[in-house]
View (cartoon, rainbow, N blue to C red):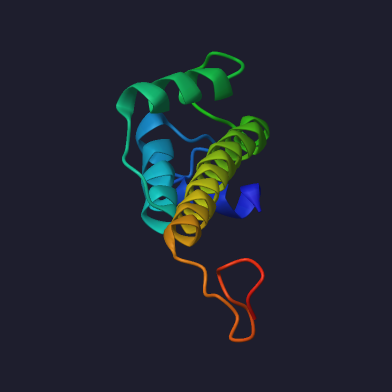
Length: 110
């Protein structure tokens, strides 16, 4: 998976992704999963992924980079799902419960 992504974004065919090529990849991922681009977060992630410090991401480093991106996406998705579940629980708690037809809300009555 990471290698196909790598080839797609290696515009100049150098065998490495520079920062602009990598940014295109990140922006495409964000279009698909949502969210807002954060330049500072991108810079930090790029620096972390550029293990050899050459200012580019090679094929080996791309695997770690993709895993980092997917980890962030998974965390955001999990947080969004948890928020939706909580909203549903809150809405359910606010919905009045129906009294069964054969039961009276007054004790001892049927």
